[in-house]
Every structure is written in structure tokens, then in C-alpha cells.
Length: 81
Image (cartoon, rainbow, N blue to C red; front, side, top):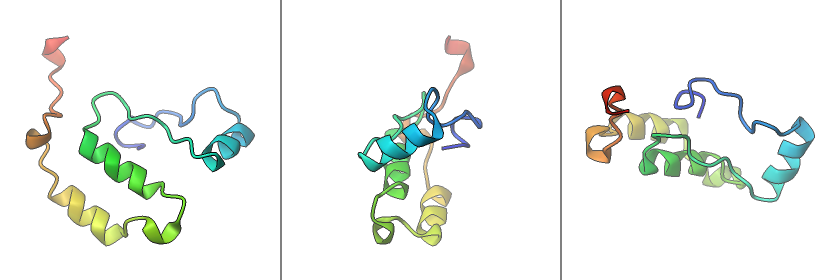
């Protein structure tokens, strides 16, 4: 998440205590702008409440190494603004 948001502060507007409360209630940050759906799905899996359901680092590495950005239509052309 930090990479795709360029280091933006997570949960803006929330105190640390509020973040704990909303995360325990199941809230997850929405996808950042220009984040491909498949990448956000991976992010959500990393945030699974059950640790054993989260992907391993090996899986994440393999997934991202083979992630086809062009096929996801996630190329961001700054000239289109």
C-alpha cells in the first residue's frame, strides 16, 4: 500500500485508537487511485484477519514478479489529464 500511495499516511483523519477500532470491526482502506483491481485484491488478502489466510512472502513475490501491468490496464498516462 505504501508503494502504490507513494508513502501517503494510512487512515487519514483517524487517531491510532480509531484505526484499531475500525480495523477490528472489519474496515479496510479503499483502493488508492489508479490501483489495479487485482493488486487491491492482493492487498486485501494481506490484511486478512486470520494470519494463516494471508499470502506468504514467497507468494507475494511470485505474484508481483509475474504481474502484467499492461494486461491490467493500469498504465497511468499523465498526458491524459
